[in-house]
Amino acid sequence: MIETLSHFSQQVGRMLARVANRRQGMPESILLRRARTFIVAKFAYAIPYLELSKLEAPKVDALLRKTYKQALGLPPTTSTALFSALGAQNTVAKLQK
Image 1: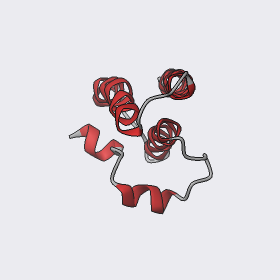
Image 2: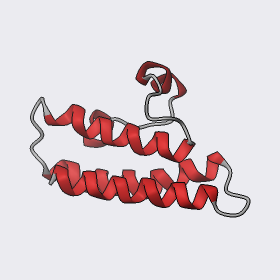
Image 3: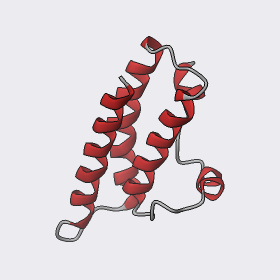
């Protein structure tokens, strides 16, 4: 199931990148809202049904961060600590509640 979520997050990231670069683009606030709409809804629905091990939860967090970074136009090598300080993302722990 994590492979399915990974594939879905890659598709959404590419879609957001295409929309962001098309014509005059979209503001980051709208792109972030779109990322939340697609990714968080899918992950919030799927995660309660998954029995994530201690090794799989960080992988799902990484998928969420990667998609948010793509939506904001940040390079993939952006520091996770600095990115988390923005408060723009959800974590698996928040989605499982």
